[in-house]
Image (cartoon, rainbow, N blue to C red):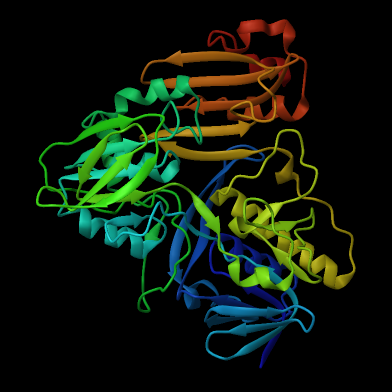
Length: 463
């Protein structure tokens, strides 16, 4: 039997950030990480855009590389098959047992596939991207199902193939943007609409690097930002075309014939033949092995945690995609299973566990005061702040817009004259101002539409 003060399940961003946080706060305490994959995710090159908003690189490395500078960390390449929380014991697939004083479950999530068919591919980790590339190189037509970040990136980055994009909403990329921003991006669905600068960016690995050193992962951690940068997403055709099927879902997946290997029956009555179906319809928390222990589970399938990231089981914590927050949230923050939140949660949980062991007071991290996320959609920088789509405001809010076709899209959400959220697309340089105005909740009624007037430097008023 192995034992450690802190045991972490999972080698994704939440798990690695948690381990690094504990190593910094308690370098003399023992840490064991249990990862099914020899590859783990490490955050590097953190660049703070504002006090709360940051960009960072994600590198996929062998676990030995990541933790070679932390002598108190032991890596076990194994899978958890059981938890005895009364005796603080984990059972592993190898037959080994691990005893802990504090346990953090960072087991992530797995793709929510639309069906069980050999022609359905889910994009989740490095192995699934390689499988997608292999199939795409032999494809003329693919159906992409989903409307989140992965689906949007696939539609924009894939070339040499006919794409049928099936979305359940009335506009594209509804996970992140509103119908106005969707219209702003509409022209970028046309292949060949990218600039030389964007094409150059695609050849440069900006954030994620694949450096597989030790065999193949059985279930790797989720892909990070810019996962497609070095992937060759090229089909058989010389040109590309994207057609959209709005407000519908997959009703059935049917066997193929001489014309197409597989058919997709949609709820709008259409039957679409294709070479491959890409299921990008979200994820499900990967916590099934822990549910038999009596742990509280949220409606979305995640392990319910309080503001200290503690589950309902004593000495057991959870972070990242595996957890669901169960405390009274700050007005402009909500949970979204994103890399930024996985990093925040992992680091904060490390502090919480160390404080618990030492009997020290814990204060909730300021990152839970404001939702922040920076990403790219259709090759453009996108910053999301606060209640960026009016979440929780019950349609009782005002919207201010500033749009320059092909250059920028700025939307701010106001309620009772106070800014609640913002969507900033392009190089707007408004991140810091909007963040401060949301946090400070200043009454902006006197500015009216001049708040977004490019000829007026609003920041001068708040210096």
